[in-house]
Image 1 (cartoon, rainbow, N blue to C red):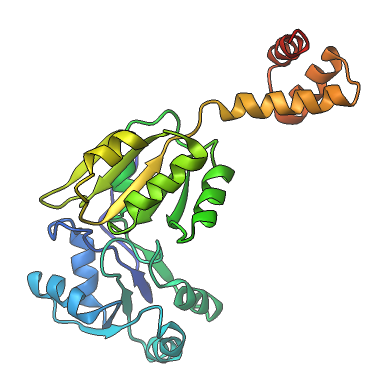
Image 2 (image 1 turned 60 degrees about the vertical axis):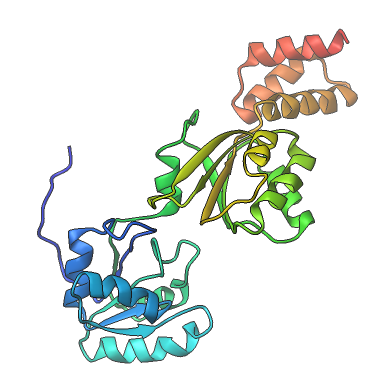
Length: 278
């Protein structure tokens, strides 16, 4: 059990998650921090102001987005050196998860300022916590690349793992069609508008999901392509065949592969024999 303690130390810089849709999904500590700091750095002051107004937060907000990250760094460092506290928020969710923040945090650490991140809303964890998975391993790639070849390459390279990505409603259906050209009719889970009024999570094959949204799709999208269960078997077969082509015997192959890849020696030996009998 963890010791729950409401006492927290002071930091120079706070990374504060904000709701991904439902404005009530913000922690009491996040509200307290946003009220107590001197400056709130945010992607879009207009978007953040809606949250600040809702919770009667009067702290000054300053824009900090991917187009002005570097030019804002010196300003923030100067403010921190004068003793001020700063909080960083994004338009929605947790900063630095597909949102700006990396440049300033790197500079803060270099300059000896203390940085902390508050727990809170994130589309990835919200999505993962409501879909069935066998095992905990997954690959999060952020926003999926835009070109057909980039999509095919990243999906093929990670076929042995559950792949999670963000995409826009304008592109997601095309993206799924591209994925199907290299992964076939793979199983997927697709979430849209998480935490909002029209939240929906759809499970099924790519063709099932495409049929479900044939009239179009709206909202913020997070999607997972389930791991190809046959990938490991195919990979083992290719390793066995490669060693056989070099003249290794079944017994030798089982020792080599079980040692190098932490596999069951008897299972490898049995599989090697099966390939020999083909």
